[in-house]
Image 1 (cartoon, helix red, strand yellow):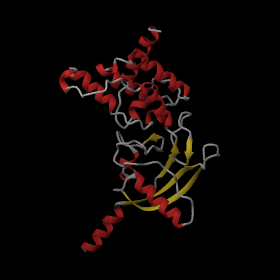
Image 2 (cartoon, helix red, strand yellow):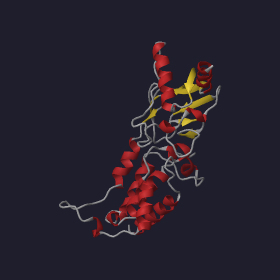
Image 3 (cartoon, one colour):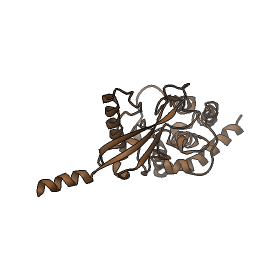
Length: 261
């Protein structure tokens, strides 16, 4: 009786799924959806582990595995950038794809999996996109000037707790690009505003303050990201819950910078 119960329990904790996966051989190739069936997927497994099962199945069948991005698989780096059933990182709140578990889906579900959709994030292969655009935006102004030499004491530059907390909240942005994928205009305003805010709120960031927002916004526009839609989808889908208030701060910083031209 005990053995029968265990077997039934294991069956109840696994699901069968239909996957519609975007396949694209390269940036200039025409993409298409391909449909796959996966069986006996543990509801305790992560979404990426489910894709590992799919790829093992495809390899055993002599087919090309699905290319997707991942690194830490701990919800830290944000490389697991997948658009799942119309949501960046899937239907769960405040998680990256690697931390999305299959218990969020039901037996027999059809899951549509796509890459980020944005002119600023061209597809490299299948579900992998080129996110170097974010690095270029950071290089345009997301830095501070520091003097070489000894490290100053931690209490040498007092910062209010409110400012420090806001700066830390903004700095929690992992640059995954979910905000871009969620925006119907493919805007990177939430990402840029978070990176501007974490420096604008601190005295260390004042040296470049006059040009930081202007340069980063200019680079964002140059790289093909759209304008802010003001719908708030970016904040809702952000795995770190970056606040829209940062966009207001970015706008203020940008206006101040333009006024100094």
